[in-house]
Length: 190
Length: 210
Image (cartoon, rainbow over all chains, first blue to last red; front, side, top):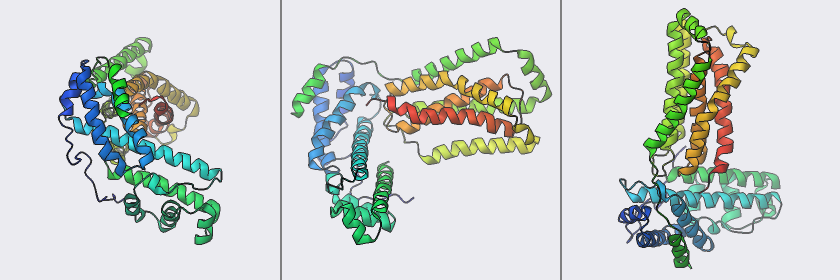
């Protein structure tokens, strides 16, 4: 499977924010230095405020930041101070971002299965640019329904009429497209 | 609001015992050693001696294959608990399984394994259940380490934990099992390893808390 090349591939470098010095703060935090810990989390938060808004809808960003900081808090004992801090932290941030996408997709899928229709555009989950980049890597039938549902915000019935696919096939194609989308996203950020 | 959140986390932050992959490996090996010693204490060594005398090369090859698989899977499972570790792709898993399958085939073609001897359900089921049972200690220890670690690939880490436990179970059980037919080993030992790996893959990620 071809790996999608996104316009912005840098995972560790956010302009103006250097995570490398946070490693020393985190090492002190592991020993119980609360001031260092507070500073480390504050810098992580600043980095997340640049990283996540490009990948999530505005209404999800604050929750995602808190979830990521909570994960850092719970797993801070797994950071090895002899190694660079950015790969450790960015891997957690990326994991929490993809985890949030997965749970969002599951929630939307259950709404689709309950015939509640699609009540949000893909902008609420992914940036339009990212979505349009991956659409080209999906089979045409899946890309079409995903685009209609997520970019144009059409209901299952409307998509069914527009594409000639049955309503259940539309749901199946949306489900498959989402699964493939997640795989593409995971691969592209490895 | 965020600064309140950070202050809250800071207030509850106590010194932590850092995770050490080397110590985790030692813990798994210690459990494996205890299981191995306990098992060999109870089994009839005459069976092993007779089987080894009859076919020393294939018996040795059998130990080496399952032992190597167990060591490789334990190492990869522990490495996968570090979020910054290189991600384990399908390619790595495919290489491990291909090497195993190739070893088995070379083993069989070289020493003319008997295909018909594979299908002995009563003995085969006994082997499969024994392998799965003997897999539990190592699998559970790796599961506990998973909860303490920070795997960003929980499904793969869990699968590797099951594979490691299953391979070690097969290694231990092979010490008292005289069967050397490659088809038999592939089918019944493989079934035991596959059941543990699948159960681990399905169940273990549910216990991971991030």
